Length: 301
Image 1 (cartoon, rainbow, N blue to C red):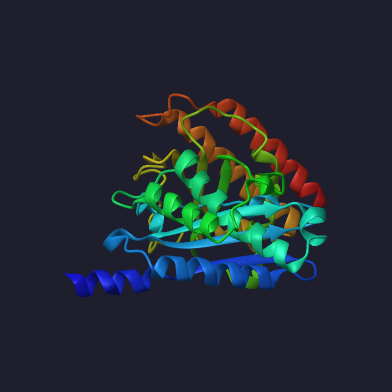
Image 2 (cartoon, helix red, strand yellow):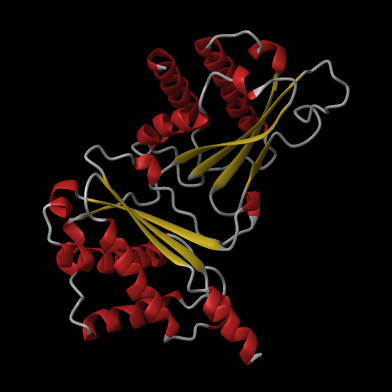
């Protein structure tokens, strides 16, 4: 058992720190990552240690779509046992800081995100997050690196509402025939959705979709048979939609975006037909918001 614990302990050292900045600054992330890894090597959190990525961004124009936190409380939708915690640094304050100060900012940002994880998200069963926080804070303090005054540098959305595209299959249509980019659309949606409130029961929508020839008998249409919507246990909602590839072949970018948008809106309407519809989710408001945002995107695409 001890040997297995040691193996898990070594695997748990896969903690990555990323800093995206126009100019210098990435070195602070690498140095902070090494410090945190060394801290973990001296601990023993057992077999329930969680792999983690800490992503720090420094941008003149903040892309809140990047603040996409994932914690492994569930294996739903293929999420693995790995946490991803994200944070923006104030561009001016971080860019003007010395290398030593940037290093301290990054070290304390890890503590900031660990506290955020505990207070705003959920920790996996058996993972001693409280102890990790207490031990890491004690280590920073003993090394004279603890500094809570940096919190004015950190820019963090707490539980923002998100929309995620999850393409399943595309048949009878070449990649070059797809004119739209769901990453760009997702960015546009999420940089607006975080400002909105649709209720307390749903915080993230996963939109799964297929594109295939409806006249091809090899492919089954699940919209009429399987559940078109499914609510998860982690304040998420899965929506399903299928598109006839005939609509997309030869269509220009704006036409394809219109077809994509119509399918999304149809999927939202089906939420009302769920047997266990989310009780505190304003479907009508969400429908109108997505309709407006997709129309806005179509104009600038």
